[in-house]
Amino acid sequence: MLYEICEYCHFKSAAVETLDYDELKELEGNCFKTQFSKGDLIFKQDALSSNIIFIREGLVKIHIKGPEREQIIKINKGPTFLGIPTTFGDVINHYSATAITSVNVCFISTETFRRFIYSNGKFAYEILNDLCKCELHTYKYCVNHLQKQGPGRLAEALIYLANDIFDSNSFVIPMTRHELGDLACCSRESVSRLLNELKKDNIIHLDGKKITILNEKLLSQISKRG
DNA sequence: GCATTAACCACAG
DNA sequence: CTGTGGTTAATGC
Image 1 (spheres, rainbow, N blue to C red):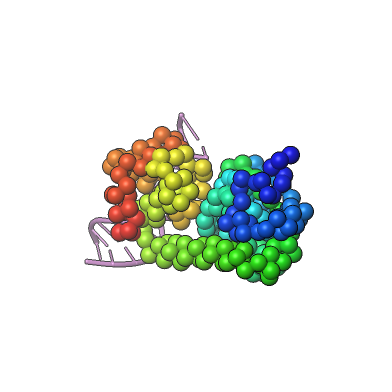
Image 2 (spheres, rainbow, N blue to C red; image 1 turned 45 degrees about the vertical axis):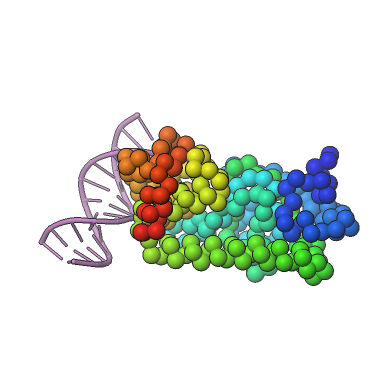
């Protein structure tokens, strides 16, 4: 099958683009493809971390079990690497990853990945780049959650989905209200009420899980104001 | 005190 | 799973 060959894969990351022919062949020999369905757990918090995972296609939520409730840290959209911090940072996973759509992934042996980092500076640079972007996102997310109130946090979550995940103001929320609450850091009841208020004020159009942001400016004002 | 905010609970589609 | 209403606890005038 053509897509089994890394060289011809359509979902290469910026890092993998820097690999030469021999390196791609090496990757191919140490890369195992699998599919996950919506809702499948890809790896679990507190379990032994094993491989580097590359998401070819699909959405994955990164979540941590807190003392009170589940917290969604971010949503990863393929093509991207998944779980680099938790594989290199500690032996134990510090977070779980769950598929929120059906997901195509490659499991890459950590050894192979490490060899590329050592031997190929450009590869390492691209990985570093990704990790830095992720860290910046996390700083922002952290401050926002600590200082905003409910409406601001939900508005932020919606803008995050629209801009970073779907690149569109109109999309189908890939989660339940409960999960949206885990993302925006509020209860499912609050999500319901807040969404209905946004709808009433004509800031969004809402039909079940289909949502369209009508007044982007107002929504981002709500997000900024907190 | 009173108002606001948001979580929790219970119940019903 | 979702929406709604009542209750309650914390916080800030």
